[in-house]
Image (cartoon, rainbow, N blue to C red; front, top):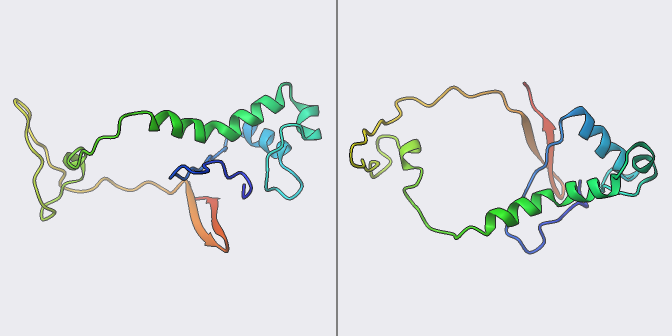
Length: 133
């Protein structure tokens, strides 16, 4: 939704994918005629659902609330945190082996799965569409 910009000063981006039929229909009923904003007191959503305004507000704020919850954690630089999972020969330092641990290095990457959605650039932003499943 182009006008649902909620991150403000936060250095973050988020994408909410509502692919469950019930929530998709609910949010569709909450859209304004231009399909750019969710309105909790829109006539159609108020007529079809109880407590719609509170639910729309909660959905509109869910990504920001998730960000704020995760941002409360103390930030710590851990350059080698995922080295075990992403290390390949020729990329630098090998993962360290802890006491009694065996270091198993990946030999081939796992097979890729079909893309759930595709991102395409458009004027003023990006377009997110359902991918091939």
